[in-house]
Image 1 (cartoon, rainbow, N blue to C red):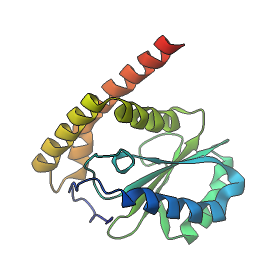
Image 2: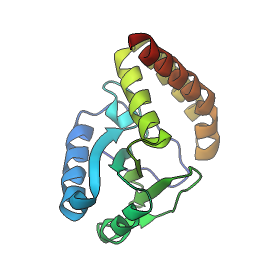
Image 3: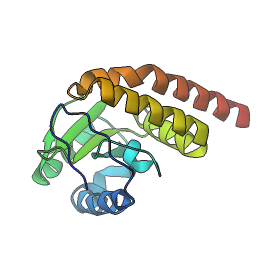
Amino acid sequence: MIGLEKGVVRLVPYNPEWVQIFESERAALLTEVSAYILDIQHVGSTSIPGMRAKPIVDIAIAVADFEEARVCIPPIEALGYEYKGEFGIPHRHYFVKGDPRLFHIHMSEINDQPWQNLLLFRDYICQHPSVAKEYAELKTQLALKYPQDRSAYLDGKADFIERILQLARTNIGAEV
């Protein structure tokens, strides 16, 4: 269902149960921090219907103010998450849960780039099947090349992701 050992890259076929797993975790998070957050979204490859993915559910949480959102750290930790700080992305609170890893939380301000990028990428991939196919093929190649090196796998996707974000931003500008 979900769960991946640390450092391992293993893709599994899309599982529609990922949506229910997200919804269940979303409900638990809302119970603890609903007063401080603006939105919770299912992001990452498990949120893209039909996409092969690492079986880890990514959750994006939008807040009004990054610094004030620190009040959410203890209640989220009480749900079994480990707080990792910004973890390489400025202005993002990052949490992980499970061993093997089950969930990632990306918490940032609703108007900041990290939040917008997660939703923009997900939505563009969902709306463009040929791009989704290209992304799936890249992910498969990288997973075969780097089965024990998650950092190299992520680095290998970076240029593709940035290219898609640029396309998505251009499309938004063309629609306005």
